[in-house]
Structures are given as structure tokens and as C-alpha cells.
Length: 74
Image (tube, rainbow, N blue to C red; front, side):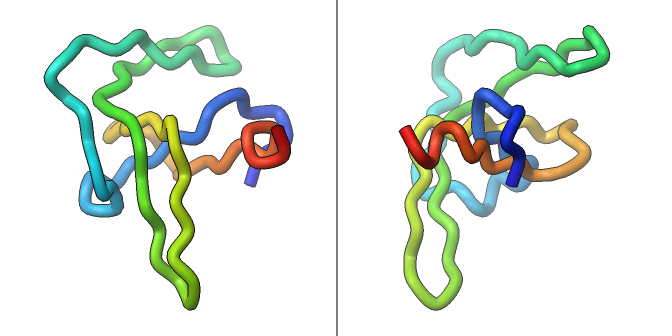
């Protein structure tokens, strides 16, 4: 969970219920000024209850998964 992140990102393709990779997505801008390629969006997580997060960016080169707290509360 990250309160400063503007978007959800996930580095594991197998966590996506639907992954759209048939179009070009923008680059994800990092806090250090770097950029990494966004490969798709939308993920479904499974714990005791199924939780679906929309507009998740698939970034295989991301160091960690990030859940944007701002996107969860808006």
C-alpha cells in the first residue's frame, strides 16, 4: 500500500484476470525520474475474499507491487 502512488502496479502477470496487451500503453514515471514500460492493466487478487482492482498497470520490471491508497478511496 502506498499513499503517494497515483496508480496500482503489479509485476506478476499470473495475478491478472484480464490483461490487455494489444495496444501501446504509456511509460510509468518513477520518483527518481526514470521510466519503465507499462504492459497492461487490471488484476484480480485472491485472499479469503476475491478483490478486484481496476486499472492496474502490469510492469514486469517493477521491484514491488503497489496498491495506490488514493485510487482505493476515490
